[in-house]
Length: 243
Length: 208
Image 1: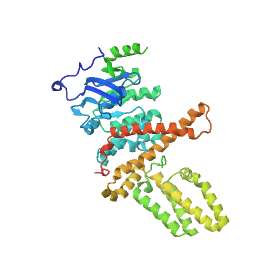
Image 2: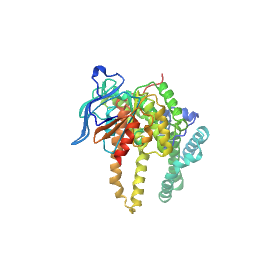
Image 3: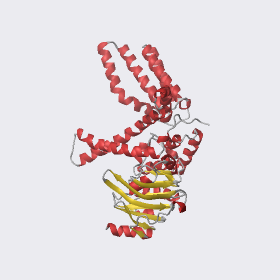
Image 4: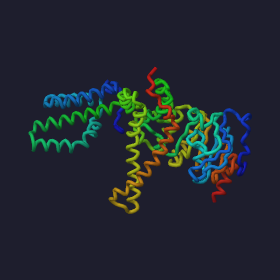
């Protein structure tokens, strides 16, 4: 486990694996308020958790990974692509699941919403239909394909949001507090979905149970990475520190 | 429209959305152009047959659409009784009833995306002046999607205010609702970016 390190694990570009996310001296500020300060990381693990108090910079960190937020200073590279200049390519590689599914379901009915990202990518209609059917079955939503999204339960809405991202077959998926609004049953359901993904996953969460079995956990504090290690190393440290 | 679509495989369901909307428009024009009771009754019978027998929609689904306009229809008939005569009133009321039912049949048998695609097709001539039909179509779909979401948030705010003793203060709803809608819009903007809305093609992909 590494505490309060800055920049020490950022290798030179020549040695950086192509399949990695790299943050180089990243700082981000909203106006005068700095929310991330001089963060340098290389993310190669398949399962990465991100924890920390509210306002610690977790969500901004997550948004940096697919170019929703561009750093005020520094560089974010996804598989060698710069989020500042190659954001469309980055977003095709990195899917993003938000905390509130209501804010990311854009079409009135389930199947139409799942198809949205594929239509944006100009995927042929036959393939759109096939891939939509595939993910609806995969996430247990096939019985709801023509149902209005606003009539789904909270858990079903989050599964729909996840399906809408995964149908685009990203190589990585970032989850920003995906279970915060869910009950226990739905939290476990979403956790099983995350566990079953073949993609590289970054999960920002307050539900520490979700991180069991993860490869690496980053603890954010005051816009910096305060601890970085396995769940067994970082989670108890974070819990103790949170009082 | 928000939650009216009822999946099915009937000829009405399978008919092109553009054709259904064209028939709806023609019916509306025709009924106003020929205000005769036998024409109106024939149209009403045809619409009911298309909805109940051909599309096999449940009567309750059509009644759900008629119920909100029922007072309006009754009031209209009453005005005609006072100002004209019962036959003219019946024509006016049955004509509106036929159109409401026809619109209900169209929305119950047509996916929103198909209706949006028609809107996009209609807007294509405006591409030359810079209008992006896919963007307008997305806007229409999102409007339909977010009406119930905003209504739900308004209901939550009302409940929260009521729980803290507020009652009947409608204006007090506006500011918190506006704040929530702006927050929702911000996240929605991010979600659209994340899902590639920037890449929206000029036209929908066709079946191969």
